[in-house]
Length: 309
Ligand code: CUA
Image 1: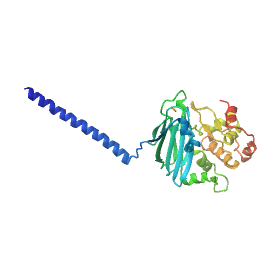
Image 2: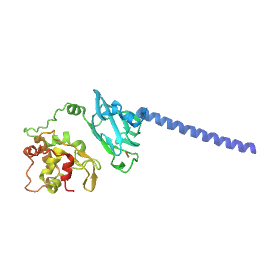
Image 3: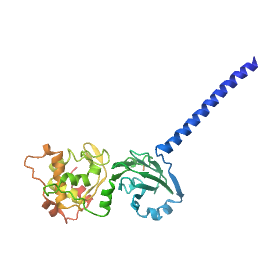
Image 4: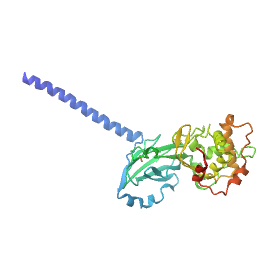
């Protein structure tokens, strides 16, 4: 009797052992499958030192994007409470990007949407990984490690542009935007310069880039005609609220564009999405208004100051 009971127990033990062995094997195979086919990366910590030692290294002296060779990009970024340095970068599609990431103060996260990149930024360590963006677009970066009171504002973006456009930008060539009749095509200026943040439909990205559609005409009405001129020439820095959603990014100054381009893109914003909200006596912006507004030497903070909430 006792012997039979023992046999019975041993039989169940063997079954459970086989089952757990099979489960372990399945999990290992799943990981192997992901590494092989899904491009899963295991970030490699290549160095350990003090944050000061790490940040004094060549690679981190000027964080940002550097072209090492055609199709080979180095992207360095430093996380600190509560920003990524730099927060917004542009890279070409199809290039192999080597990330070098670290943190200045405390532990931060670095998660890039629409990719499987999700690494920790650790003070005193460099996280290195390789990635290639095939699709142009805006990829938001978020810090997903609670790092303090401003954690939720710690966002950034990687704008992936077609390689030809990226090369032209690097060479400082203006992106020419002429309509067939020889006038400047505001839609093309928008597509080349504004769309990567404010999106093709003008709706922006919630929490990162405010919408321009349904907002531009309202700005002219509430802030005055000159506001858009100064906004484009000098940029804007400070927290704003649009449609109940707050934004705390930086709109760069677009003074490198010609006055004709700036007038054309402003008119495009107002007529493409907000035509019905414009007053009946609205006169299109003219290049001369931008010409006249140059030389005020405003800063992005000045433009923000002048804005009535
Ligand atoms: Cu940095 Cu959360």
